[in-house]
Figure 1 (cartoon, rainbow over the protein chains, first blue to last red):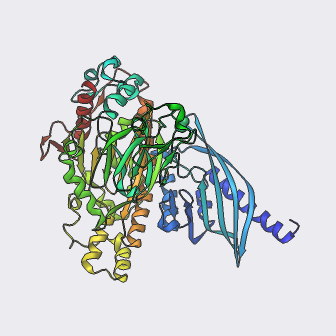
Figure 2 (tube, rainbow over the protein chains, first blue to last red):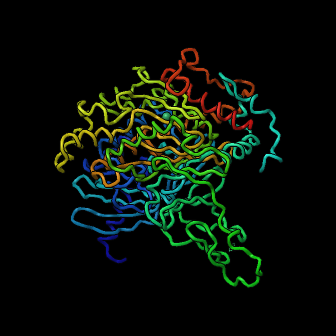
Figure 3 (cartoon, each protein chain N blue to C red):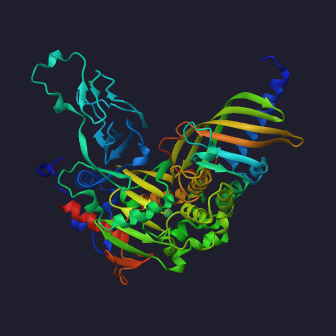
Length: 161
Length: 424
Ligand code: FES
Ligand SMILES: [Fe+2]
């Protein structure tokens, strides 16, 4: 692509998403919560569904549920998250899918390795972001993390994708 | 494996299960696991599907009976068949689609074709098999199949009692559970699946174990509004009970007011369901109907544990599949109202996601403590695993012994049946 506007959009979206990935690996959840629009949704769907509201998802969090989820991770009463598995993730293969008004839709690939009890597990997901351009930078309107085997036999997760 | 070449077990089943404790090999002896697959999962009724998962003629889903992969399918006459997913020629699986609709099953290797009832219909170039080849003897291996209230069970055992007899007093509880359809048929609307490094019986024990709830699920309780947290504080309230229902089954009543969802319809609508109630009113449902649906959305006030692999738990079906002595697959099937209001089904989906599955606020903590048991039994093999809680106070109930809500009565029921089956 030689379109420099698109190149710089791709670059800034990538930088934003990488920064988010870094927050998640470091479990800097307060910073992560601040990345969102109030009406944003964080969704881990099952299978190829697009109608998230009317389907069973692994999670489909509005602002309230995101805060509750983070509280659960942080308060120390949840045995699976105290301590949680540690994670290292890489994100790549970024594509700008569409731009519409102030919104940009970006997708990318995520590889994540978790470690707990001396055992490592590996996960792959397609991430799709709808980001809104604001004076303070991007805000997440919707993030969909679709695991490669989302409709298969999984394990429990003590972290976010 | 047949009775004749059964494996010698060291120790024997009656050296492993006692009234008040069980022994460590129950969770980590691989030979014992093999014997269980034989003497339990090949001998009794095993849950394979809910009828709504195979709604039409030709609908099928893959399932398991113990370690045997099966196809559950509805034929053209609406009858349900359960058959082993293995071609009778040279054993290839005939289906690798998890759920769908078909007119027949064709083996991909040499093209043998089977009907929806498992019968062998056609095979390419049949001449070389000679005249005495009998197609009727080469259908997919079929299991005996019976249903109760939409719950489909199958068994390898031609001699076992009819399903309703096996269920006994459980049928009354299944009927009560299905009232959460609010007059609509109950329908499976999605499932969470996760594998846990634990012996299958650790999950079997858990569904009627109220004792763990306030400890393991504290973070879930804290994510609820005060009114709902109060509803789920059933251990402190101590109004419920656990009852042995025979044949290894048990029921744990947590919220007595919600045992019969058609009772107390005049009770005030809880705060957390006010928005839903308004949505339903706006859609034109009358007050009585709104109350009935809203009450059903919250689920039943009890957990029903069926030996050996399924439970009807508050608002969903829990299914376990033993994989090996230290690994079990768990499914949490969400249920909704078939043809019911979308708003009500959406509310049920969100409630299911809140607690269940790999990212729920409940299941991951369950999975963690179950794995801790499997890790814990690696040490101190000589120590007992206690199942004596509430033994002191147990009274005769309607169907069998009834204990305090936090009693281990349900585990004792399951292990009685385990011992009976392992010894026969
Ligand atoms: S293995 Fe199925 S046709 Fe040969
Ligand atoms: Fe639990």
